[in-house]
Length: 115
Image 1 (cartoon, helix red, strand yellow):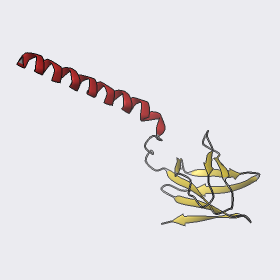
Image 2 (image 1 turned 180 degrees about the vertical axis):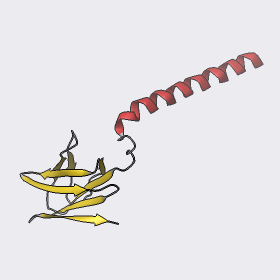
Image 3 (image 1 turned 45 degrees about the vertical axis):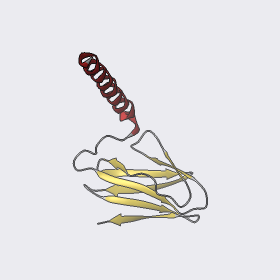
Image 4 (image 1 turned 45 degrees about the horizontal axis):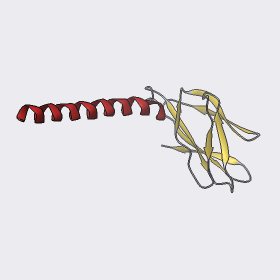
């Protein structure tokens, strides 16, 4: 009886452990990788009345940012980049460890630098 109980416990623990490993692998694509050393960070704060689509030149995917919300930080290598929102393009130069937020409104946009 005890052997059967131990076998059942071992079987259940094995199933739980393999499920956790599979879930971790499935979630790996949900998050950006860790930023490399000496990166710069950029995000958009949308103060316009509608959603905006922000495209950073060095990234493949754009971000859809609802009104009144921050987009996620995107890390990039230092240097010259630009953010496109609709037909407007906002150039920016980034240094190592810069953290910049593009604040966009109905009438335009400006960069805000932390630090």
